[in-house]
Length: 68
Image 1 (spheres, helix red, strand yellow):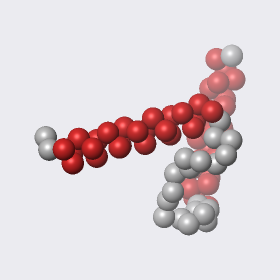
Image 2: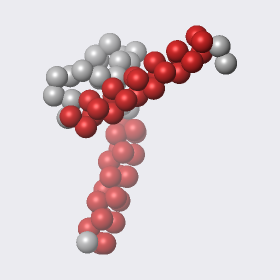
Image 3: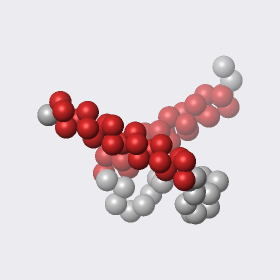
C-alpha cells in the first residue's frame, strides 16, 4: 500500500470519527450534516409512496401496541 492510499484511509476514518462525535454531542451547531444533491430542498413523494409509508407505519404501530 502506498503512502497516499494510507493517508486517504486515515482521512476517511477521521471523517467517520468526527461524524460519530457530532452525533453523540447532539449536533447542536449543525456541523457534520450530510450534504446531498437536493441543495436543501425537500424531495417530494408521490401520493402512492406516501400511502405506502403510512400503511407501513400503521402496521408497525399496531404491532408495537400488541406487544406492549
